[in-house]
Every structure is written in structure tokens, then in C-alpha cells.
Image (cartoon, rainbow, N blue to C red; front, side):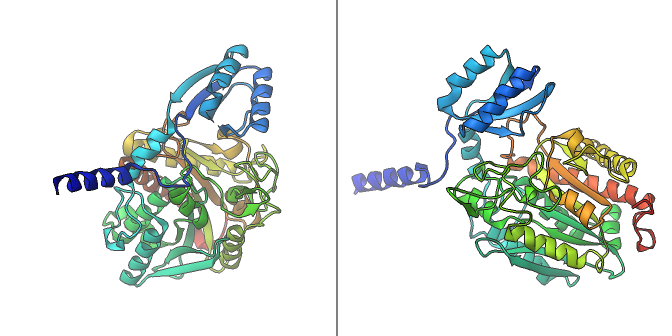
Length: 431
């Protein structure tokens, strides 16, 4: 009997320590941070990204005086070491083994069958749990309504909520989880929703009482589910295109579609899709916004991402300035100040093309240009640009990160109100 117990215990330990089959692993993938100083360095890195799928670039090499983060497969470590030396490219190893981060994070994920009553912000949650928690809140608060948009490629509804205490209020739309691997986005957005529902703070109550809110925690449900079940670092949706799969939904909107910062290659992480708004998720979101922007008086749009600690406004595809550029600068500055006052973190605010990199086909540019939503921002939450965690932010940082987001929203909406964006339910004259 004693031998049988030992065998059983050994078998159990073996099962628990065995990785799940058919799951992408990143054992000994390294994270490099380089600083580009010469044009030959730019050209080399561009060629490297074009010709090899063993390098994952966080952004693209565009010009000199640019920092760039690159994840390198282990069998390319000798190659990248030689290239850095040959091109005299300054580089720092931020992380030696990406898989260690992912393995550690597994302890911060609640099981898929977690009841919605146990939902909290000390852990990351599966899509099913998030949606069940949303339904629980709708059942609890009479002024909260569940919204189901059209289905994704894998026939999952895009689920969000509408919080409306006064039909005369102007509305805020909060889009989260469009990039699958950015788990801190849905976590922070559900935290903000919970605060709007339960907080007794006067400034939060003001937001809940004087604005109506549309909050969609996961607008890329297929991709988000895929990061839990197959590839933690997946970014796109999951629709096949030839031998490859997935479209970057934040490159799929009709705002200079397939322009700078997007790719026509289905195998690239920023693939723009077969045509503008080709994806069912993009279509569902765009249709809802077109149908409701006027009737629901949606005047503000927030798209929540990670990482790099940025607060950005249009445009991403051109250096032309937005019509209300100075106002957007002032509003973004208030958000950055509020975040620093919350936990000391420094966020940079500015136009997308000025602060991160060129991008086209993104949701914020589209709602600003096509729908005339005058206050439109993309957040890149924790960590900093040289983060060693990237998209695998420790769960202990969920609450402080979400508190920073809430502080920024309060300050930015106060400033937009002061500037008159919500007065008399009219947009500002210059728009």
C-alpha cells in the first residue's frame, strides 16, 4: 500500500508539472532593448523583421534616435549578438527567459469555472468568468443593461454593459481588450465599472450620475480566449488568412486603412486584414457606434491598451494636427498628472504619431474622424516602455494600475467638462 501511495503521489506531481499539450512556449526567449543611432542600423533591423519570424518586434524600426524592444528566439541569440556587435548597436538584455514570466503568471489566473461572486482584482480571469460577472452586475443594478453585439469569427458575442442613470446624459464609450495579450486592459476596465457601481467617493459618484457609460471589457473575445488556451502572447483575432491566422483589429478600422504602421502580410502581428473593417469584431463595434453615437450622445471614447504608460489622441497615421489639438493636449496632461499623483507613475501624453509610432486603421482615429467624437484617447497602461514584463503584468499590479486609470478618467472628464465639451449636449464649435 505504501508503494502504491508513493506511485500515486509521483504520478499526480508529474501530471501537475507537465505543460499543457499544444500550447505555445517561450523557453529562453530573450527580450532586448536597443537604441538606434544610424541609418544602417535602421535598415538592418527592418530587413531582420521582414525576413525572420524568430524576432518579435514591439513596434518597427523607423528612424534614428529610436528605442525598440525585440523578443528573440533562443536559436537566434548568437545571430543577434553578432549583429549588435557588427552594427555597433547599443543593446540591453531586459529578460533572459520569457517563459518564466508566463509560468509564474499561471498562479495568478483563477480557474475557468470560478463563480462570478468570486470575481476580484487580485487575479486574472477567463472570458467566461468576466461575462458571467457582467451578467451578475446587470442582475444587481437596475440602471445597468447587458449589450450583446454581433458575433466574432468563432461565434462569440461581444458583450458589454450600458450604465445609464439619466437618459439626458452624454455618454462615454470604453473599449477594452482589443489586443488579446493585454490582460491588464479587461482587468482595469472591470475595476472601473465596479467603482462606478459601488464607490461612495464624490468624484466617482459624479461620473456615474452625470455620464452614461458603455463599457466593453473584451472586444476581441476569440483572441483573449486563445491567450489562455494556446498562446499567451497572441495579439490578433483568430480568423485564418491562408497559412497564417489573425487580424490586428486595431489596424482594421477605416482610418487610413493599411497605411503606416500596418502590414498587408497575414503572418505579421499588425496585419490590417483583407480590407477595411473586414473582421466581424470590427464590423460589430463599428455598426453599434454608428447607430448610437448621435442618439446616445457619445462624446468621449477611451481605448485601453498596454504597455508603455501613454495617453494618446489622434492622429496615428499623419503628422497633421487634430482640429482641437490644444484641447486634447490639455485634457491628456490632466490625466497624466492624476496618474502621477495616484501612485507616482509617469505617463506621457500626446498625439499617437508623436508618442509611440505611426499606426493606421485604429479605432480612436476612426471614431474621431468618421463619427466626430471630439474627446478620443488611447491609453497604454503599465509598465514603462522598457518594461521587462511587457504584456505579462503581475496580478499584484492590477489594482494600482486600474486606480491610475480611474484617476485619469476623472481628471480628463473634469477638464473636458470645463472646456465645454458636454455643455448643452453640443460639440465644440471648431469641430
